[in-house]
Amino acid sequence: MNDVLPSLISLGGWIGAAELLVAYFLVSKGTIAGDSLKYQALNITGSVLLTINCASSGAWPSVIANAFYLLVGINILFTVKRAYIAQLSRRQKEELRARMHLHRRSSPAVSTGFVEQA
Image 1: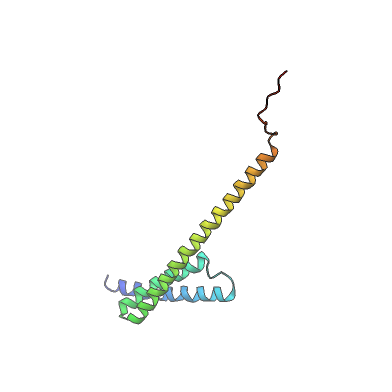
Image 2: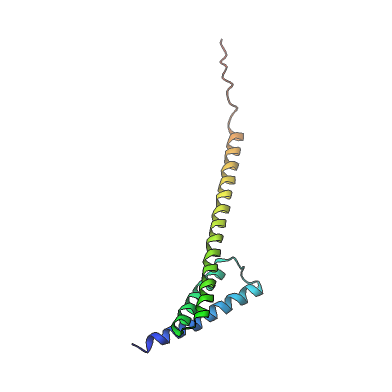
């Protein structure tokens, strides 16, 4: 069992490095956007795996660099989420206004409040 954990940590480091390189390649080629969920997920998971790998090796400068990389990824993820929610809210308000406008146009003329007497 003692040999398994270092091997898993080493494998995780390689996977993390591959994720960061793939993310960088995909953004550089224009395949995915820098603010996409896919890009941020690759960066976050890659930096977590590399942080664990570097910490187990005592490579503290790399631990700090990857920890900041992780924080940036999380920050961007929440920024994108807030922007998406705001955009969704604006869309829903616009749709509601459009429905209300159509409803007003299709309803019969509103009574003026005067009653004709015979």
